[in-house]
Length: 449
Ligand code: GDP
Ligand code: MG
Image (cartoon, rainbow, N blue to C red; front, side, top):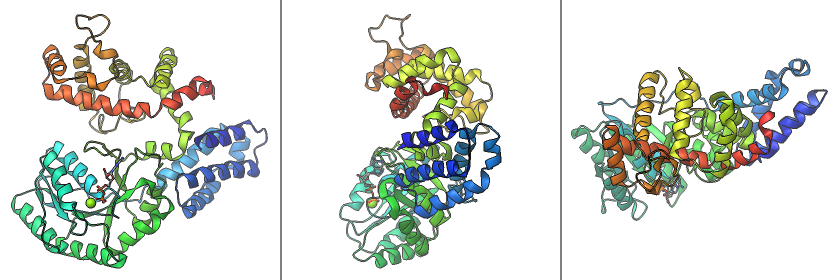
């Protein structure tokens, strides 16, 4: 799929005469790829029309970097389509915020509610979960289990069958307890579709949420638009979360969800676990949507961030899928050398904007330096008193508590920070292992184009 995109663009850059036909061929090829990524047909057609308006054939003919111009235009256009033009409501810490989750059964609502709560709890919020799903047997147990694991207060009932009543009671209770993020999980199925939407409308009317989040499974395919629109018509959806992005789906339905709800995507779910949850970042998402069209983009980033002489070695490691702590250390070094790096930072897969938030680059840099200090206390080639070389091992299971404690002592940092470092490492390693195939392809010699 991605191969076909790169090929299409490649063919185009090889053609000596660039005319409208060549541009059309290229666009048709990309259209096919986007449809396979579940982007809605109408949206693809709109994108095509816009690209034709933007890309100036004379510029292309004049021999500017054709591939770059078209690629950039498509990329920008897709990014624009994911931007509804206004940000979603942002809950305010310390105030009462009620957030209601809606979406079909199985889309990942209950899981995502907990992830959302946990994410905020780690940042010092006081979240609480309310189970207003009285339709599915076991719904309350599931939420209870999740909440207990994350030590988040919850409310629900085994006997009450009125979701509106439970929702209102739960919200009231947690308002009294001064929780600042009250999350209402809802049911996703009904004997009749119309009654599901009526139920959502009633729960929303009774609890007056500050934000309604529509949760959508990334593998839903072309059904995304209608589904999102149906929810938007019954409740005031203000944000979208796309789940199961760890699977095969490229998530093209996100474009439909944004178009149908006129709301931004705010997070993506990348696994079943509580911490497999990321702030939505448009650019990497679009790269992925374009399949391996990402390859050249990724290579550009590598070339920008990683010094020339280190590039072949890094690609070698990438193709082996061997992302050790040492590789991470070296990338931290590179990134710190580059000075004010907020933007560049989030370009490398896994190195999230969270690690280097815009406007907080100083804190971000200090954090990375702390990470590096801790890594200096790990065992490596020159420090082999202990049999296992921690810095050169890519098995996260190696890091048990006693090792972490030793590293904490050695570096004079709290254990909590060492644990945080490993969480970060696991996340980045996972993102890099997804790039394994790219490394292989790149070594075959696509680096030059
Ligand atoms: P609900 O019916 O909308 O409440 O959906 P659930 O939260 O019960 O999730 C349905 C299934 O999807 C469960 O097995 C979850 O573990 C799984 N799930 C939810 N989010 C993700 C995700 O981001 N990745 C993966 N792989 N599975 C997920
Ligand atoms: Mg549920």
